[in-house]
Amino acid sequence: MLIKIHFIQNHILLLILCGIFFTLNALTLVPSHEQLLIEAQHDQELQSRLAHCIDKLPLRQREVIRYIFFDKYSYEKASHLVSISIRSVYTLAWKAIASLRKSI
Image 1 (cartoon, rainbow, N blue to C red):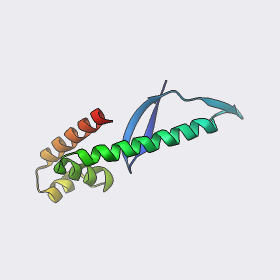
Image 2 (tube, one colour):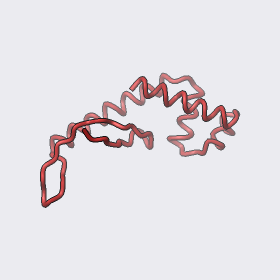
Image 3 (cartoon, rainbow, N blue to C red):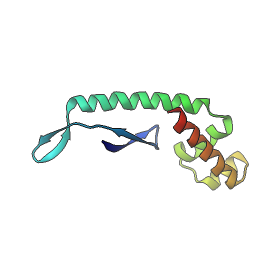
């Protein structure tokens, strides 16, 4: 088993436990063509599921996730845009991430 990090939808990270098969090429490990195709298909499925799960979040949680992870705003800037306290932004982000973890 190998832990692999995939970048999904602009910067949301998903840690995926998966078995990866390699072929030996000039003393370096290179993923097989089949493995690359499987990973690409798996990534597409995860992106689709993640987008669907984000759409199901409550409006405020969606806004906070969009500002922090997609627009790359700080928590402070997101709090100004949504007109709530920074602490509330952290709470909304935490709840959204927890919900996404359960859904995915």
